[in-house]
Image 1 (spheres, one colour):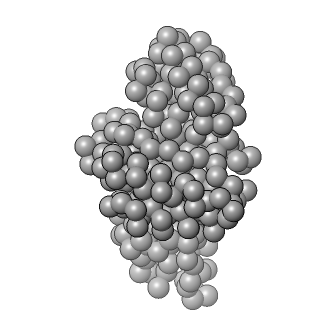
Image 2 (image 1 turned 90 degrees about the vertical axis):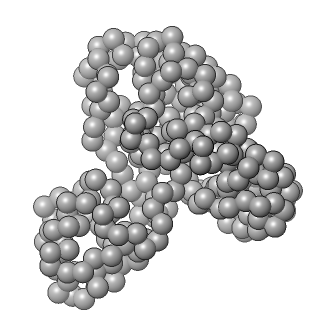
Length: 278
């Protein structure tokens, strides 16, 4: 659990909480483009909502939160927001959260954002992103199939928020993504509830950093910094390879893994949900 180095007694803190993943991500994109801020963490609130935490100079934070709130409101994300002009150092422990992976929805519910220098994806690599968020899988599956048939786009990944909320993210050039989203949106009717349908041209660095970045079959060197040391210790005793959402091993291997992870129990769910011992 880390805290941005730039946080001092004079640092301002802003928070925007919105219902749905797409309204929050679109708001985040607008916030980063409106003011010079540092995105601290993204946290799912377990009540169909996404919380965006930012820090920076008070004027920049106020501007970003105002812009983000307005965008989320326009998308019917029912936003709640606040700005703390001078954050108490003692409050940081309550605001900051440990990176957390939710086994049930198979994704991170707390994400720490890298600095701009650490962001691996260039905005030049993705001209536009498209989002279709529904309540219910059937609707979003029909929508993404229609989107891919309507224009030359590529599926980036799928994000689940709980409560049946699921978002499919696509990428491509701006015209293609717009055409795909326009074609997909009507397909939701009668199959589920449409939460959001939106296109982001030239997405911001933090939005890019939140995209799914770990393909199936990746090596252990690509696992998160939190789990990497323990995975490599396990690798000394058994062969480890990455396969998302699958756990299968012999009884002996299971006992070995349990002994290693018992020393760091807070990462056990990441290990057992993300790696296969063969």
